[in-house]
Image (cartoon, one colour):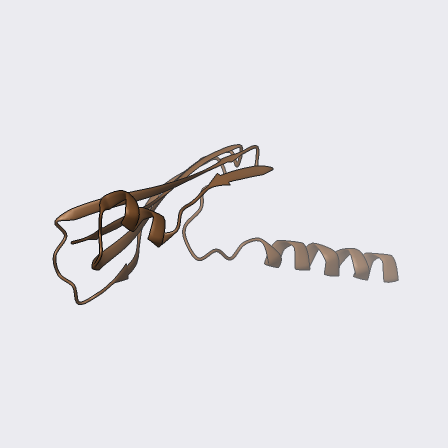
Length: 102
């Protein structure tokens, strides 16, 4: 009886631990564009992008920081920040941080 109880508890914890996510996620394919932040700086004259990649869910590289996106777009005042992600079967992922401003 204890083995069944422990197995049930483990299964319950397993189900509950991986389901919640701060953004929608597809098990087979995910392609999203989501807002991250907005400021009172209303101008979006310039656009900078920072990129990261993931392979096989084992290796992830890149710099998706706001500072890198600002530098790549020549931005000093940020108005909005958006996030874009694409993932196929959890094997290959491409992630971009878009910064808009002046």
